[in-house]
Image (cartoon, rainbow, N blue to C red; front, top):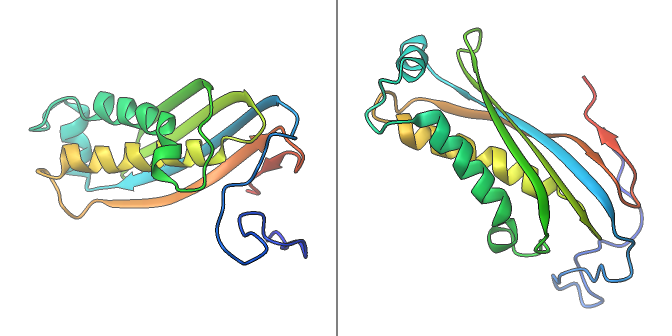
Length: 164
């Protein structure tokens, strides 16, 4: 588990009020982040989605597109996030019969003063929510699980890779 620094929290000002951090003095570098999560469901629901038999249509294509769109809107959703010029957003949704359900992975890249961890996490979250929405007529007990940052590169804090 990562230890917290004894430095003051960056999103609080001298009065303890939340504010958006000034990143204008930071160096512009290439930054990447990857995140993952999963949607657990019954084998019957998984089979119906794979066969293209969901009442709302293309479950996976819609969820993938929603994840990409969400990454681009992260600053609109998370109050203290900076709007970033994203150069890459990739969302992969893979069937996992062992789960059973779907594994979701997002990779985001930019060249900016701050990282894209929140964009990757937002992409996974919204893709999972959209998958649920598109398939809820088949099963309302699906579970969205394990949304987490897998890795990030670039920036002053250095690289991070989730331990296995």
